[in-house]
Every structure is written in C-alpha cells, then in structure tokens.
Amino acid sequence: MSKILEQFVEINQLYRFYYPLLTEKQRNFIEYYYHQNYTLSEIAELERISRNAVHDQLKRTVNKLYDFEHKINLLEKHKARTKIIEALKDRSDKLKVNELLEALEKVE
Image (cartoon, rainbow, N blue to C red; front, side, top):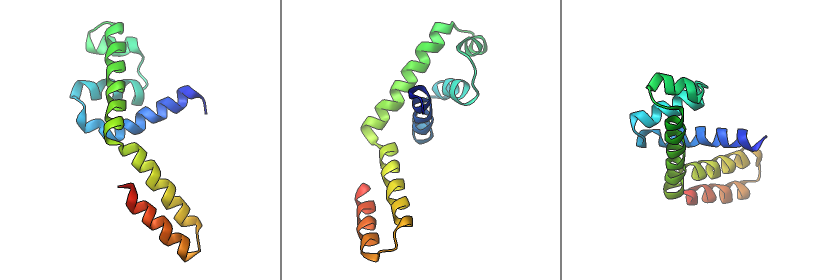
C-alpha cells in the first residue's frame, strides 16, 4: 500500500474515533474531502472561501485528529485489541488463549 493511501486510511480511522470532538465545520471539511472525494476547489466553492483556506482548514483538522490520538490513543488501543482478538481466533491452546485474554485486558 502506498504511503499516501496508508495516510488516507489512517485519517479515516482517526476520524471514526474522534469526530465527536471536532466542530461541525471541521467535520464537514473532512467529510467533503475524505469521504465524498471533493477537490479543494469544489469545497472552496461550496464554503465560499479560498482554496488555500480549505487546505489550511483540512491541515489543521488532520493535525487535531493526530493530536487527539497522541493524547487518548483510541486507535492504537483498537489496533492492539484487534490483533489480540485475531490471535485468539487462531489459537486452540487454552493456556495461550488465557495469556491473550490477559493481554487484552491490559490494553485498557
């Protein structure tokens, strides 16, 4: 997967966790750009602002999402839980399952 695509996926994952912490305006910009695939120019026209203002707003909002993750770690915890759950599905050894369950409890 390309670095740009990885970042796109990561921003969408962060948005799923932290969208309630964003303003309506910030949510709209993320929705337009990352979910509806609008261009910066199209968003600028809709919002009646400059293309540069759209770029700045998106950049600030994405930085805010990363800042939330740095402080709260919801995405990282989700990834850890998912990894443990997948490992549990692959295990038939009861001792190993107990170890994995204990690891899952420690993620919180």
